[in-house]
Image 1: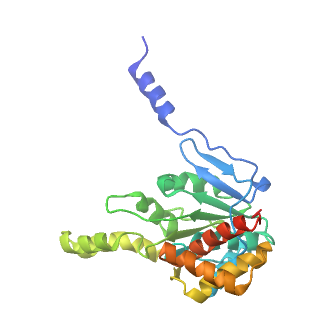
Image 2: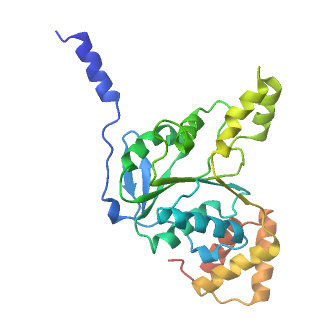
Length: 279
């Protein structure tokens, strides 16, 4: 008869995550972190645009480029939170900046981690710690609800814990919210908490752990049209300014908004009608 302790030990061993799968880090420039089982999966082709095509975000672009370049050179650099209006190029900027810096510093790798896997971020960092490469850890569309505890794991990574963040890892995150949680939840904490000041501080202090806050705001019509003209020039699509302007304005009117995402969606439609490929 099998000993009960042996059966328990065997069950725990089955439940425990297996050893992480590590690919040839030098073979790719970008990776996806998958948890349970832990896998660092290489990305053959990253979906991104050239940094020169990102219009209307010059200050954020230059700041993030400078910060990333310092990190790639082994110098001190800050974690960055890119927050603000939807569709204004936050995640596109992270990927474009990585491509620009990585061209001269091939040891700079991009690792994307999903918000749902943040509770495993410690295991990911253990895998990356001590390697000769530099890793830009990227979490897109980061936000938390009032009952979400994943933010605690992220707080420890940013600047807490005994080990702290590895010297060869930096974290860039994007969010529509500056404090990473809905405003109504912040107000609810203030009004209903037993100690409302401490309750709010616990939640919003996560944003304070990012050394760089880069804000993104809705674009005006001139920037919107400049984005589309930039795409046309980059992909060799020939169209006169008057036609482009009238069609682009009609497109954004049907969407009820202007943004970099809307500009790209219009250009995709325009390219299809003009038999222009986007490879």
